[in-house]
Image 1 (tube, protein in one colour):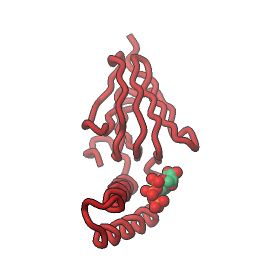
Image 2 (cartoon, protein in one colour; image 1 turned 90 degrees about the vertical axis):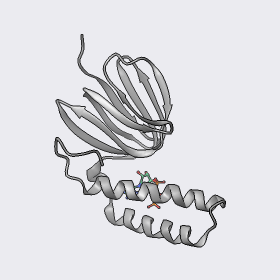
Image 3 (spheres, protein in one colour; image 1 turned 45 degrees about the vertical axis):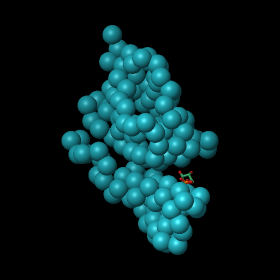
Length: 143
Ligand code: ATP
């Protein structure tokens, strides 16, 4: 029996990652889930978060924001609104996005649509900053 399966992460712009992996853990809107080889098929809407995949026993991370995970027995296809490898993350850009989002949050009311958008932008910025700063080493906690 195969011990690995295909992980493919695509965005509207590009193919971000294509690998044979041991496991994938991602952040769905209903919570975190892990896919292993021969997983039962399911479809999950994705939230903002770090996707973790194990390759040859080693954990790696990818920033993923929105979209869907299509899990089948031999493949996990991530169709994300945005996704970046840690080394692709521009920390300075994320820091500026965080500052803009924080300023908007301070200026808007909670029930306002802009407030919800600013909260999501803040979440993306904070997750990018965390992921972009973490060395990719086995055994580290998930950012
Ligand atoms: P910003 O306000 O800086 O654009 P954002 O969270 O609104 O941030 P997104 O809508 O999530 O940006 O992404 C738009 C595009 O820009 C995507 O292609 C995404 O991969 C890329 N992107 C956004 N922020 C960064 C970053 N800090 N480093 C690298 N790529 C980024």
